[in-house]
Length: 319
Image (cartoon, rainbow, N blue to C red; front, side, top):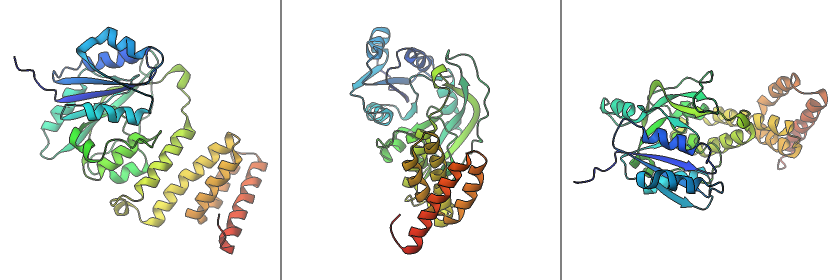
């Protein structure tokens, strides 16, 4: 009998996910669509994830082992190995509803043009079952490039993407340790429309020890993604340079606040200088907003920093 080739590759990066990886793999194996392959990339785990996968699943899944290189590199390793026409990423602690792949393919078949279909998601507790209430941002359809520059409502496991589209953009940017998925969606949106299916067909697990999101890392990733997107040809159709400068400056402002809260004044000063260089007129509004959240000495320090930056700009010296 001729073996049927996979239509969809579900790629799961795993790093020290021994407690949750089987839930993720089981949800991938439970897909109602029959032509799915599961590719798990063990990214240098040290907790027995690799051994557990081999013992439990054998040849039912493909397992790739590599030295720890980060989630973007792990997803790319899976992409280069994948054989399906479509790719669905899934993190090692999240889950797919059993009809996720079938539903996305059904919607794709109804379209005349090539689109990237993505679905809604549900936050779940650490047990992977209990749903958690949460407001999710609006999810746009069509040409969503401009929307993605403002923020991404798309979780990593929501889209079903043509594999060739991922190859054409070079996969994920392995230099990014945060917001690498947002950067990927932005690059894909330069050439492809997205179509949202308002059904929660993916589950995003919130761990008991990780309910406080690392805001600093996310903002750093967002900033890098915005800085990269500045040079994408389609960006100027969304925002002129001055408007985009204000958008990027806003992220610098947010990072300055986070750095200040963590006691990293030098880093906070650097972010304020970068924001001042991009959008000088916005700085006073920032001070007014921060005056409600910080002690007077903090605002005084910020005013001093802004004054120094202004002086340097006026004298023509480097900031």
